[in-house]
Image 1 (cartoon, rainbow, N blue to C red):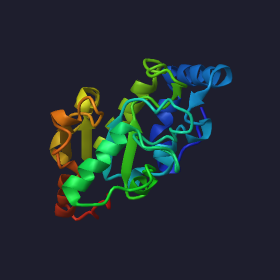
Image 2: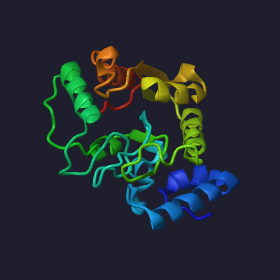
Image 3: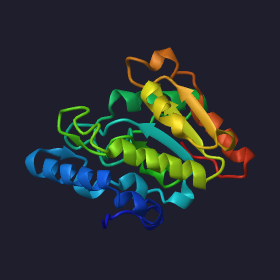
Length: 221
């Protein structure tokens, strides 16, 4: 199956694209785009990969679903398009960065600037029906993104995995060779959980300390 995705990812993921589950998944997704409003736009389903080639990955942040409101999702976990109001979880992420690193709160919630520095913003499910959270779960995306996590953890060294909330932490159990990566766990940044361990987690400074210790450029959060 020919999937339009950045070349380094194409080389690693092609065996996954040929599997039966993935072919069934793509048929489901195509039918959803024909019959319902679905986010993100089809051209941005693999945006996280296109903006962050495999050889550049330094940090992996795992989300769950894309945002399901109009104009929000553009293929990067937690990120929104320019000019779109920040969802509460993203505001809390920036609040933690401010408290951790002293950076001012940005006006834009577009995280492409992170992707371009090597932050893979990976949702477990890459598409969603409008206004229907979880509508594309258990259709095959989770198996695909598990394969992505296995590939990056096996092929790379000294990655930082940020696992926020029980869902991401459970998905992170498949990370291979944990001793060669830094795995950071915290509560989810949503308003329902941020006070239970996300605020004060200091993941962003911890990530930069780890990257610097291993001779890698720090992320400008």
